[in-house]
Length: 346
Image (cartoon, rainbow, N blue to C red; front, side, top):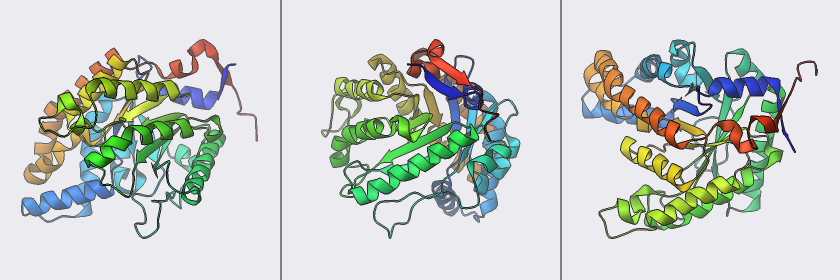
């Protein structure tokens, strides 16, 4: 049975991909975490922090690195200058969720930006939308039912606007610190169960933005410590399992790991036979630039971006060309996709 995609979505999916039909995207929609990082750097170097630093940082990174990417993910609240500065040849993915979550309410519940809609964002130049949800498959139904309904509404809205929807899933368990060995042991199952849920057709999600299904700190062959949660061979198995469950394109998020670690993870995914369709790489690409920007100013950041930042992106592109698969392969190839024109539907 062929996968039916509206003409608008199909054209935008192609626009979001590079000439190998792989999503090679730059994530620059960090808000709370970027503000906190800049405040720490400002304190470290004895500089005065202001929100203008955040706006200008996104603008500079977008201007220098977006031409090297098939798409760039930005937010309108703090990334409005970055949106204006991006290359006209680079597609725009816009964040649709509020940053963070209410820590006083159980379940890390998601919410959308109240003065936006899918159609409004498309009219403002978005080629795709992105929403992040925190998800623990083992949370009570009263929490997860809210998140499932949220995802359905989001996907349906994207369907009406004929714009691809990206769903980023970050797993958690309130019993454990996300960097702990205890959490590392259960993370593969949490990520796999999340894929099994949100890859379902009823959500109308076009691209799942998934975590690497393990913590690289606790791979036996990758650590100098005595503690480990899995072997490299087991990690490869988790990647292949994740891919086997996917019924639509999925890409990996970098989760702020150092650049060489993210590159190693993607190569392992390729070796495992996982059919992922690309990345949305954020902090792994530009995080070092935050300190440099605060310490050395605009010129220092531009110099770093044109050298190390550019190298980070181009090396990632090469790794993707050798390990990722075209987005439409998730549906059995282009011949198994039926494109329909819904423009006349009112």
